Amino acid sequence: MISQVRLGRGVALSVGVLLLAMSGATAARAMTPATAGAVTGTTAARAVTGAATATGTSAATGPLPFDLPAKARLRASAKKVFAHYFTPYPVSLDNKESSVDYYTKNYLNPAGESGKHAAYGGLLRDRPRPRAVRSGDYQLQDMESEVKTAAAAGIDGFTVDMLSLSSANWTRLKLLVKAAETVDTGFTIVPMPDMTSLSADAATLAASLAELAASKSIYRLADGRVVVSPFKAEAKTAAWWADLIDIMNTKYGIKVALVPTFLNFSANAAAFAPISYGFSNWGNRSPAGQSGIASNIKKAHDLGKIWMQPVSVQDERPNQSIYDEALNTQNLRTTWEGSISNGADWVQLTTWNDFSEGTQFTPSPHNDSSYLDISSYYLTWLKTGAAPAIVRDTVYLTHRTQLAAAKPTGGQTKLMAPRSGTSTPRDSVEILSFLTGAATVNATIGGTAKTYQGKAGVQAQLYPLANGTNKVSVVRSGATTATVTSPWTVVAAPVVQDLQYHAVSSGR
Image (cartoon, rainbow, N blue to C red; front, top):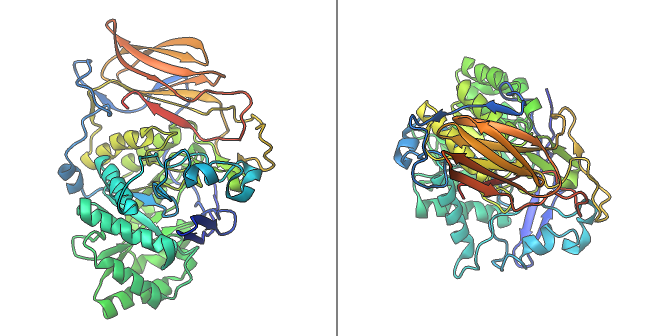
């Protein structure tokens, strides 16, 4: 098992000058010992999961390979899917045009913020998807847009990292609650006190939680209990949390359902069981670390608790000189499949928008909504109990823009290395196809033509990464049913090291 360390983050943003001061080295959050089910093989072509239509022909156009059930049907399920929201990275920090905004000038630019990120090539490698300059309260409008995007994907709500009880991060949390109230009262917010950053005593934290709980958008169980899911709950004792629960009840008349998110679940489960409704952990970001989903879920259920399983894409942290090998979409599919097959009660997408750790599901320039779209397929499976029928040929193309061992030319002095125990780094282009029936898949990988016979259902096909461009098309009975070209060129000599997988969808 792998223990991945994410240190505490104390983050303060001065809106007036738009400076985001990250405590430590963007201080990474800890990642727990492994969670998840068996890793699928890495043969060149393999059927992974999924159902296809009986006709084997594509239906009307649409961004997804299946028809997403109505929101009401998905929300009626006892299975819940939340996405972890990280307040330091809203859609926009300054409401400027994206070519000159704070993300571009200071976080993506190695020379940004007076050069303090130059050693590792800039704080970030990706950013929230740019939008046009807004008039009015742009921050609230951005939050409303994020709620709509998540809800449209089938997500039930956000678990929101509470980094502070004042300042910009607290303001953003309250704006997010307001946004949910405004555009979708069925979309809920789960407060997640971040115990690596908060130093408040139980009474002070209880007061802030009670303030949030005044909103109908805060997630409640059917019996009215407010769900609170502290990050690194073991930073405080079970007795400390019992005291907070008592204060919430006696002083504010609010009953709490505690669902602690641990960095070390097994070491703390017994102590927290008497005061908890359920359990979760932060998890890992590599297939090699996903061996423990079944045992974690079983342990939680044996203790009479629900389990919230972390589902993740990848993890890349330039300022911490470390990354996890996700093996294209294999880590994403493995964590989803393990959640479904082992009976997870809830899922937490880790994360919606933590760009400093490269774990984002939210639509971005580098992922083309692909990871969110793929997750809509699996969350539908989780919530309905059956893999949804594939009605449109859709392909997702993922690859890095450089070989894992490529050395940057931009003068970086701090380079990322694989985390200890992560999957062995590989250089591969992955074609993840959702096909209504068998078809010919034509690809160009780094300028070289490739062809294979795609199978009905979900299939992952790998080719060696090569310099140049990548594109894919699906042909059935002489007609092209899906096509996609990656806008990202693979280069031999990158300016900065970037080991995240880029993704693009034929449906977008």
